[in-house]
Length: 106
Image 1 (cartoon, one colour):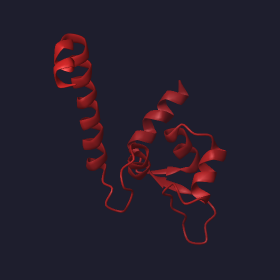
Image 2: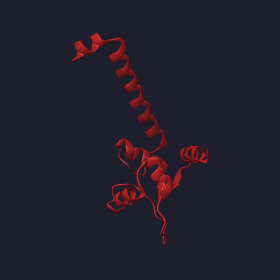
Image 3: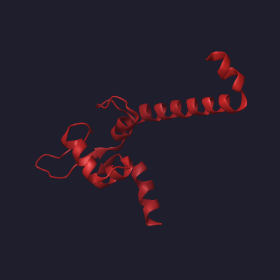
Image 4: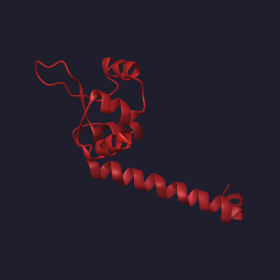
């Protein structure tokens, strides 16, 4: 039960610890370290600090293949997620209820 509570809290946080970032991404720690080292994953490190932190919206944008920069806003990620979901619903409804439309457009 504690795991579910922890996962819900990640969605509410703006800044994630390294472990929380790994959990959100669904990747092993060693792979996330590799992505950070290669500069492929956006991260933050406080001055004179040793810990790595992530901005949740930047990780979500990275997962979606969106450009990751300081302008990556929560609204942009949410809009992209909504658009992807709506396309999936539309494709699913066409393939199930209207197979003739697929053939006429193909």
